[in-house]
Image 1 (cartoon, rainbow, N blue to C red):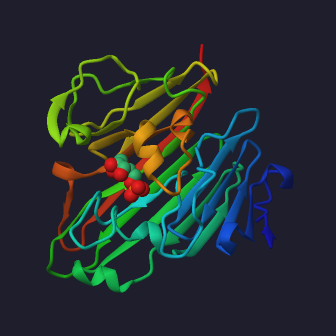
Image 2 (image 1 turned 90 degrees about the vertical axis):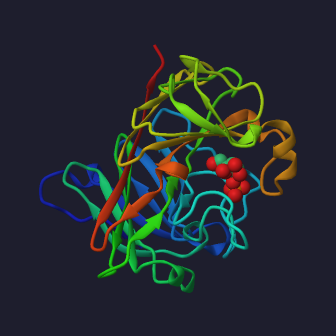
Image 3 (image 1 turned 90 degrees about the horizontal axis):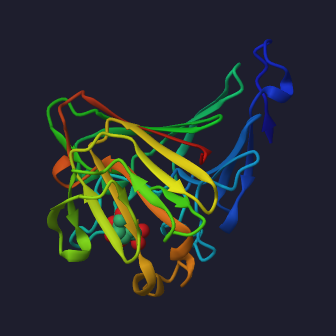
Length: 300
Ligand code: TA6
């Protein structure tokens, strides 16, 4: 089914379009197209699997070995990590939001040609361990991709403590040729070295081995410079104090059943959220909004 809401201003072809399809694994998917770009989002995990501007390669990396199965995470794109990040005793890694079906609550092509969709995480038994909350995810597609994860503590009296992260996999030409700017002087937990705390010393981070770092107390924009694809990716954010940088490199890539052995060469995760010491403590009735804007431009 295709829908373009006419607001009487923009010409129909300039208006965005939302199409409901059966995606891989027959999981329900929305295909969004605007005059500048296309995007795909699965209700499973509210998972964006593609954002592509005209005349540019896709912005998001997707593994050719990803599963598209209920109860399993999708490998690539933008997993929504909530209400915990990382390992938890006796629980699945990275929370339950990414393996659950979300509900489409709203979709709105706007007169300026952009398209927004709002998804909500239904009430699942796994949430019983937490204060009552709502989790909404608003995705806006135009020349860039803007994501908002809005968490509201619905409890009249209990604090809601949680972590969140938009675990974005970027498509790059050659991971050994990229540089990542914007983290100099920021302290990080180095997971590869057993979570030892260190400080970033380089202006431009280069990838030449497994990297798995949680940068803390950082609200700044991160840039990924990709000489092979001739583009600069900007990761701008609000409501986020943590940035995670990850590449599994050779050995970890081989250990992951849903990831190709050589795929580490073509991706980098630069993730925006609130994890570890930056976890959020939301008072009763409080709302927290994590906003991430992903855009790209030609590398000068
Ligand atoms: O965000 C980085 C990280 O926490 C890494 O430690 C690595 O485990 C990665 O996430 C992927 O996790 P996943 O559960 O999707 O295999």
